[in-house]
Length: 176
Image (tube, rainbow, N blue to C red; front, side, top):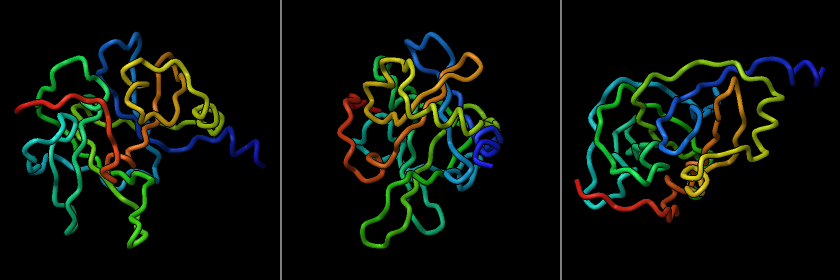
């Protein structure tokens, strides 16, 4: 029975990323449980003096959520460009609000559409072993795991420190 679950496909979402220095394609994996909602373009309020990876904040069901650009978060060697996004993906980060106990959420801006994928339990189990991660991703300090799938790198991010305000990433500030 456990072996059958290992082989069964788990519905997941892949967000292709454009990361400089990556020899292969890189995609960020979000489980079906992490993705709360996929939205079209919405107003995002810029926060003066914020790091380049933080596009701003967005009102979502009476809460302000940070809008994070994963490509800018990981690719610190290129100037951050404020390109238009196609989708906003509301995700549970795994971090918990210490007062309410609720799961903290973030919004990930996506320049391309999310892709549905079925990933086996065996592939996910391998994700805990750090695969060959592009150095800019490894240096971010936010990678929980990485594995190879069909010749591409699939990365699992931990956005908890970003939404908790404890991320002291080495991403350089950008004047907009």
